Amino acid sequence: MMKYLSLIIVFLLVSCGNKEDIQLPKSDTTVVSDVQDHSPIYIFFRVNEKDTLAEVNRKNSISTTNWIFNIDKRLPLKLVIPEVIKMQDKKRNEKVHKNEQAENFYSYADTVKENLAFLAFTKVYYKMGKPKNNDFVIYFKKGSDRVSLNGKYVKKADLLQEFFSIQFILKPRIVTQFDKNMSYGEYIENKILLRKFDLYNVNPIAPYEFVN
Image (cartoon, rainbow, N blue to C red; front, side, top):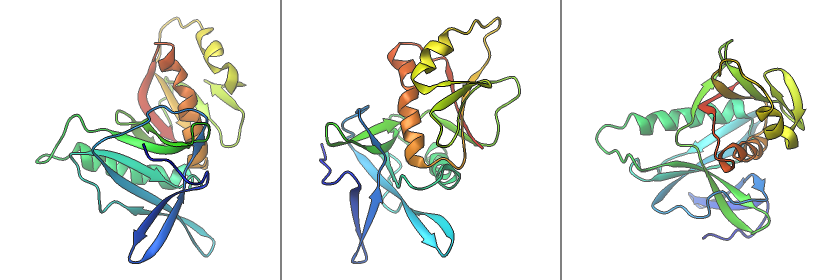
């Protein structure tokens, strides 16, 4: 298990004699503590005059291994997710060198255990746009302590209780949607919150995530 030396700067990538740092998201829980046989993918935070850019370093990615995405928490989803989609498609469309068991993980820092932790997203299909009109949408807005359950805003702490209090006549497709201007760091916090559906052995959410 890799210990991190700082709560802010977690990775130092040496490239062409220069050190690069990535500020990883933080959480107080570890979902996955160790990933074997992996390749690192880095998405750096860059600023060019007034523009924020996402710079991808994927030169060490091997399609037959688990991929760990190390992404700067300051980047907005509208820059991060298109790059993630490209990498997912590359791996899914691999014909010659393919490992069906290889997964994709996001990395983050567990501030309690002081270790590097991982969150799997292999089965997620991202869409840059809005869900269908007949979908039931769990929507996370940037910087909000509330979450929308198909238009009704509830406290994040009450998400599970409020969701399971809903009486569906016909069960719709349930999907998640995230504000495109939300930071990647906030996105990971919300993803870990959604894991409560798994912890209660109920996972009614479709593997589609919309960013708009």
